[in-house]
Length: 358
Image (cartoon, rainbow, N blue to C red):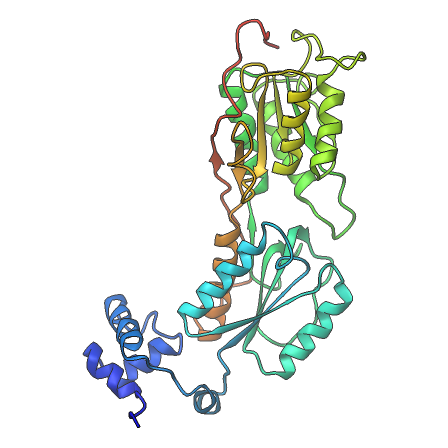
């Protein structure tokens, strides 16, 4: 029978000490082992097929190298699962296994899940939400925990969220730079306390950019639509169509629509098609999310603001790993806001002569 590969074999192949191998494969390489040596160690472990004895290591270190990931709807979401995927990748890079629990929108199950994960001796937790939320309360735990796509008004845990305020302002500036002034924003329904803040925050960013540009609210109003394709379609028909159901007078109707999500923006595209409007000649449309399998595949491809889902998952996991490795330096918990870049595609263009300016 072949002898089991040992950490000393990895050390010999990588040309480093046994201690360096232990640091890297236990997720404590940063600050202790040079980056190029870390790469050699990981490569040697892969080449030799090294598998650490997790039970012995957990008994020796008092850790299981397992992270719990608890969420309201990430794993079952059509797009925000990228948070979970990136969190799993980052955990694996540091020798951790990530175990996920999705409550599917039932908050009473979250505390039970955290209690169960604690009983199973996970080392720490990432708590994530599908929509941007200000948390009125957190599940109780004595374990290190970081937050993704949600935050506390007064931080007691490190959190990573998208900068939706600036993301919406970026979308508004893009339309303004193309010469649009009659711009309607279709926003989501208002958030109850502790609910999804994406609509209010994005609306605030849009309105602030319009105000800075000197565009009055009556020329660039914020209209409540909803979150779905159907709701986007109905709202778009109200702002783009005349009472007889045909396209409104081009001198009066909006030349651009900014939608709170890509799904709402897709509803706008359907309404524009129904009314015989060409994009972007008659109407420019911007969405938000850069939703996978949607934004780049509609006709025309949708200009949108990309949510940094993968970066949120990765950064929240890195912050937790820093806590577990004692690399926080005693810094107070804080909210990290990630940039939301604009992705320009075919649904936006300059105002065409005849469409009129504000």
